[in-house]
Amino acid sequence: QVQLVESGGGLVQAGGSLRLSCTASGLTSRTYVMSWYRQIPGKERELIVYITSPGNNTSYADSVKGRFTISRDNGNDTIYLQMNNLRPEDTAVYYCQAIHQLLFSWGQGTQVTVSS
Image (tube, rainbow, N blue to C red):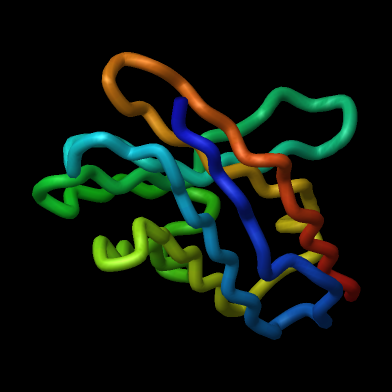
C-alpha cells in the first residue's frame, strides 16, 4: 500500500505563493498517476491537477490553469504543487492522491488559507 505525506500548506496573502509537497512510500514501480485535489468544507473534493509516470502528462482544472504548476521528482518519489497568484477562493484543504497498481491512496491533507 502506498503512503502519502503532504507538507507545505499555510497562510498567505492574496497574490502570494506556496509550494506543496507530497512524498510517496511503498511504490513498487514507476507507473502511477499522482494528483492534487482540494476540498472546501461543505463541498465535494475537486481534482485540480494530475501527473503521470512515466510520461509526465499533466492536466489542470480551469480554476488553477496558468497559476499552479505540478512537477515530479522520481529520485525521491515526490510531487510538488507550485501555487502562484493565490486567491481567497483557493482556500481549502489540499490532498495528494496516488493511483498505483489499481489501488487508490490519499494523503492526510494540508490546509491552505489565502487572506484577502
